[in-house]
Image (cartoon, rainbow over all chains, first blue to last red):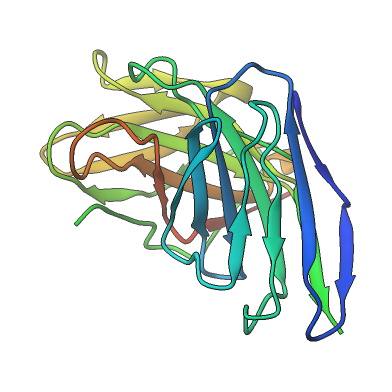
Length: 115
Length: 117
């Protein structure tokens, strides 16, 4: 899991609440990513950011929001608009550039359960 | 559209036997291909990648993968499986759609490898 930390490890949310998942990296990576993992579906990209104060929607951005105020931090907010938020959330980071450099490295994940 | 397929949900192999986890891809342009492994309730660990050059790529923990352009495949292999290799394996391709390098990865659905003693 290297220099990427995610907190908390487990998170429980009541319906209608917003919750924020933390992701921090000390690898000096340019890009950061948020994925959602559901059983049997692989990983799906929620949001990604290549530079501070800029981010783009991934394939399943509805009901989620992010910010990138610092290079090392990329928090994800799961809003009440997300209809089925129970999942395992993974943060990743990478350098940007030629293919040799841009391997994504993942954090340990946060398991979110809606009660 | 870019896509990755892992045709087997689960692969069973006896300890000491060779293992293969299959992956096929569909991309426009040159593919950048990756294999990751995930242990229960953990993040993904990078195993190896193919960018260019030798079609046989060697990675961590004794794993290797063979890039086959004509068959659009990138199968993961290990000559002798260990019980500790039991995990969920993901193949991924870097999304090269559009201009620029976004670094986005497209993942297969994963293959569970079960190695029995």
